Image (cartoon, rainbow, N blue to C red):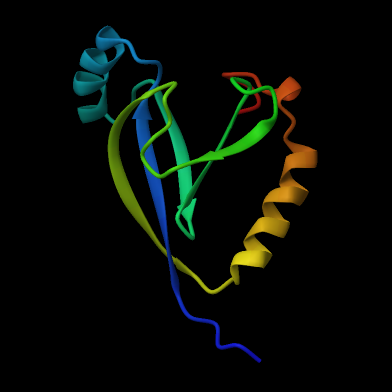
Length: 109
């Protein structure tokens, strides 16, 4: 059996939208522990997000490259020992429970 090695998990934080106004507000609000942010999780070089922008719910892009938002910072979340195929199976299962049509900014995000 293949050895399970630790794989880094990175949370990528974005300012919601591409608006400079939101980014400036988040500069202040971030210091207070709040703000209007989008977050995505990177595992195995793929960044996974949830939203309705692509109508599919869970989607992926290159790390730190979500074009709908303004990139702010990466945050290390530690490591996992899942194989890449297991991660993809998990995302597929989650996609059925998190469709884009159910997305709501405040109640199902």
